Length: 115
Image (tube, rainbow, N blue to C red):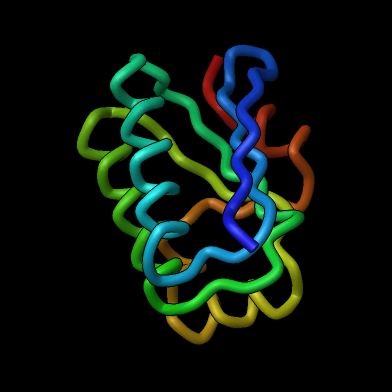
């Protein structure tokens, strides 16, 4: 199943709802390109909603790290919300939980941005 991405704005924060698998190939490339597009539009506050992500592989993790790095290099902030238990464990094992700001709810993530 291809990765579906739906974009919406909540209180000035760009929320990207992801659905499907983030894997090597088209899916991970599409995610990186979408984040680059948001950054190109001067969006400085980005949340990736992972609630509907069913699977992520090492290339998908790489795409998340690349997106985070691109955002940081351009003065933007990228946060993750609604990680499933397995995905949270993967981030913990890979020590990526120390890199990303992760929130359980979208409202908490939105509220965490500086006004």
